[in-house]
Image 1: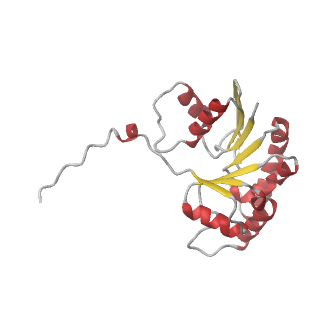
Image 2: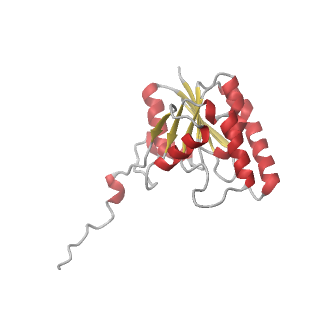
Image 3: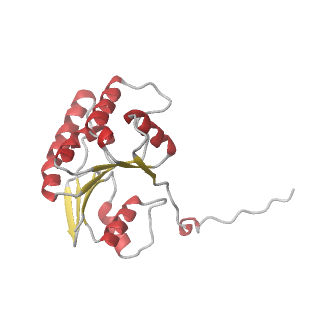
Length: 209
């Protein structure tokens, strides 16, 4: 039975799961990638471990073949102390990931620090990056710390991945530029919207010329 770990972002995943499982109307406007993840896991009958980063308190929730664990990110820190806190955050996550033994990890959150997940590759667990934003600011100078993090990500993780998900063509261009490869399988997962999300908007009124 396939086991999938998903390092998500600040998503209220438990509420999203209940809304999805009960077929309730979506409150969130836009594409809810978490629901799509639940749908895929259902279709292939996979066990799932979802890690979220909602601010507040740590929590863990279980239902059937699903574990949702919220691990808030460091707050109120800057510079070296923030980077150190992120190292500690990933270090505390490592035992749980190893215990779950996923067949694959889909990574979205904390993309600047994915090099701290490189031990998964050594354990034979592939990482599939899922980029929701560009790898670096397109129209601003890169800070030295950002360059260092990009280099660490490239060397330890990104140049080894076989596939990635991206939310725009600009992301795909940056990724190929960073790792210097063209054979990586990059799939675009562009936002989609339900017609029901626009039902409260009045139809346009024709204006006489």
